[in-house]
Image 1 (tube, rainbow, N blue to C red):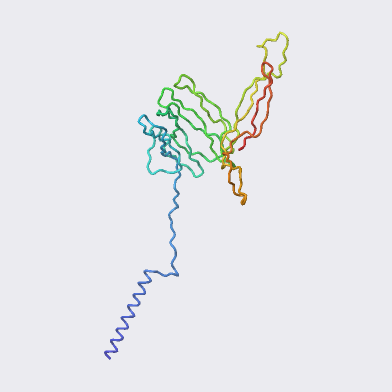
Image 2 (image 1 turned 180 degrees about the horizontal axis):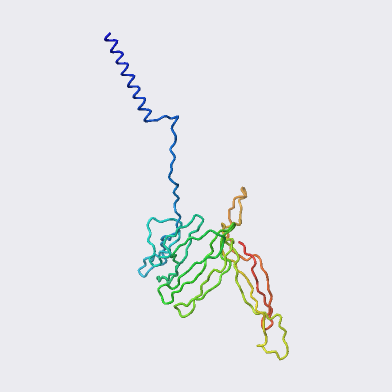
Length: 304
């Protein structure tokens, strides 16, 4: 009887241990049938977009000692820097601009820095500030350049920049003009500025005006003085071709293999194509002395 009682007590202890073990496992792993995935209530954090000026060092020449002269020409980048200091000289325009996703980061102002080197005085464009530009169709936007900085001749001009999107090709200048600025060499310096922009290929036609005095419709009469002759002033947009043409050098085979004619044994290679006038118009006029002259207008440019 004592032995049977001991067996019952032992079986009761084993059963109690199994119950406790199963409850512990349930607490650790949980019930898979009723388990629900946890959902995060934190909002999605979007990284901010910035437009900032970054350093870009460039050697512009050599000093009297022969050492290279490095200049920070700068560039604009759509990236938020970790550490930056706003320019205390212009609190209205912080060094880092906040942009929306549909904006472009481009230079806003720059200066033409004259660097004295052993090879002579060199002019280098240095980007000073960057700004966000809203996405829009191709158009001209403000781009200021400071000239002769740190001298009595310091001046700022708007040279313009072509900014915007195009369905085909790129946003490029279509018309330029010139502006004169007083310089340190006793005269005026001439700088080109962009007037108009349009969507065009790399090789494209730009406006270029020529003014002529046409004496074609003037009849010479007796006792007529030269001062009485009034020619017709004509402005003709003769145009000019600007840009480059991409492409590899072409080969003209001079001697081929007899066994394998595809193989060229000697060839003549020509360089890349150039942006050249392709179509023209001709305008005739007469000079004061009655001589017939022609002025050629470029109507289309192509890579030839």
